Each structure stands twice: as structure tokens, then as C-alpha cells.
Image (cartoon, rainbow, N blue to C red; front, side, top):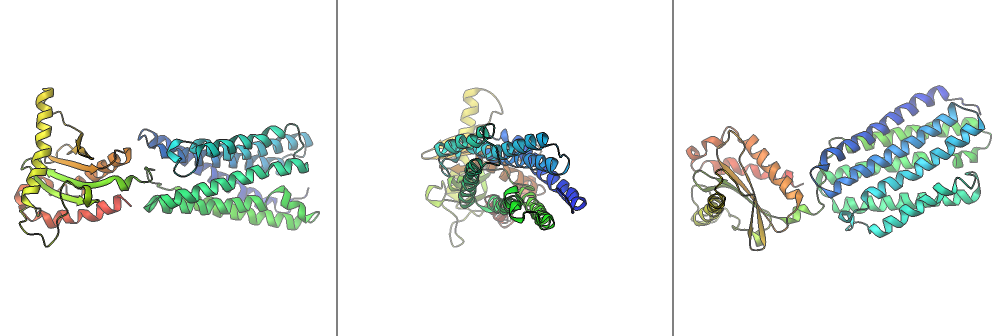
Length: 388
């Protein structure tokens, strides 16, 4: 076989392979880093990593038997390996997401059936020549798997929000471009050109360029991918309270769901507002109530400095974190109507952002009197960005 564009193809193929493996490694790293957070949906990282690493390995096998060997036995062996590895790429993805955490998106039972079906052509290739028409029909199972992955990702995008959703859209766009390039660069399509080697290699050159653009798009989507939280974690948020432990005063509050809130949202027109900018009686009740429970727990346990992390208040759960080292005593309380690992992560992010944003002000809260109301009001924007 004559390769008129060999000198152009090889560098471009190398770029595509490096991009693909870099993306796979990045997803594996994301999965490893977020695994300890116990977010079940972080398995999507593992799924993407397995998919891209398998797909690119099959791609590399194809490059080897097309450009670096003419031995029929080696070509056949590498062709079989390429098909097997590519078929397994969807199996790896679906096995990773075949988790009850994804049951709101796809049915695990259906996913398992498709996984089993994908092994049919993998086994058949050892008994049926891959050029045989029957085996070509078996490859429709792989196409069905890709369509299933497409539906899965579209549903995932629909349920996701904010930056996670934007990243998933970008990744899917790149995957579609990569899929189109692989389809048009396949051996089945190249047969259409017969002995016209130049036309065939021009087509392959174009498909390689499309693959590079697709992989670059996927890379842009994966870069700084946010921690993958439960899809509906924002719906469980009720109210955020930040309390000055020294004076037992509420210094900041943000209401997500007023119907379950411990304190009603403070309206600008509301009267009888104390120096903290909040309704005096309610502010003291909330602040002293939380601090009082904390004191009771310490007294019972007889362990000085022991802090509680959770309070059940009717149908609402109050998650609590305390100030960092070297900061004026503050208590961060998050009211939620469902306990989720993601809301704990959110509360930690709130604590970190608040202490970083106002590190020069927190230790002087008592001296600010009522002035900090306007200062801390700007934290609303940060809270809104954290839940996007």
C-alpha cells in the first residue's frame, strides 16, 4: 500500500495520541483525587478515563499495522487487538457508571445488558474473520453502545448545572467530533475509494485533523473540571448562618429555601432590625441556641474543646463547622433538608471563602458594630457562584 502523506500523517497521529492519553491520565487523576470525597458520581471520571485510554490504544494499534508492518500475520493480530480494545472502550465507561448513583439517569440493568452484548463481537473475532460480513454486522453493537453513551451524557447534561454542565457539553462536543473522525477514517469507509490511494489518504488526513480538534475540545472541557457533586445537591440547601461565637450574634445569613428556614429571610423593609442587620430576637435565638447545644455536648462528654458537627432540628439537619486557626471564633451552620456529602463539601468551601475574603475584617467584627452588614452582604455573590 502506498502512503503519499506518510510524513504528514505520522506527526499528526503522534499529536492525537499524546492528546488522547493526556486526557485519559487527567481523568484518572481527577478520579483518584475526588475518590476520598465519597462522591459516587466521581466514577464518571473513571469512565471517561477508561473510554479514552482504550480508544486511543486501539488507534495506536491501527497506526502500527498501517504504517510499520506488512507482515500479514502481524497485521491480522494487531487488527484484532485494535478491534477488541476499541470495543472494550465502551464497556469500561458503562461499567464505571453502572452504579445506583446514576439510576436517575439510566437504568443499571439496561447498562449491564449492553455491557454483556459488547463481549459478543470480542469473542466472535476469534472465530469469525473480521472482514466477514457477519462480523461487520456485529459491530453494530458497538455503534449501539456509543448511542447509549450519547443518551447517557445528554441526560447527565440536562441534570447537571453551572460549570459542570458547561464542561460536560464541551466534552460531548469533542467526543462527537472524535467519533465522526474515527467513523470516516475507518477501513470500511476507505474501501469506497478502491485503488484511489491519494483520495483515501486525503480523507484520512482530514479525519486526523478533525480528531485533533475534537481531542483538543475534550481537553478544554476537562481542564480544571470541578468536583463532581450529587446532581441535585443544591435542592437540599435551606439556609446558611455564620455566627460570631464571642457575642453570640448572627453576622451573616443566606436563605436558599425560605419554607424550611430556621429564620425568615430579612427584607430591606423589615423593622426592628438590630446592629447585625437582622431581626434581633430571632438572631439571638438562633445564635444562642446553636452555641448552647454546643456547650451541653461539651459538658456531657467532659472533653474541653469538643465541637458538634450536626444537629437535627425537626425535618431540617444543621451541619456545623467552626473557624480556622488564627481567626476570631465563628460558627458556620448550614441547614439542609437532606444530608448529602456534597453539602458538607459546600459548607467547607463557604468557610474557606469567607475567611479568605474577610481575613482582615473578621477579627475586628465587634468594633464594626453595624457596619459589617453591608460588608458581608457582598458575600452573597460568592455563595451564588459556589452553587452554580
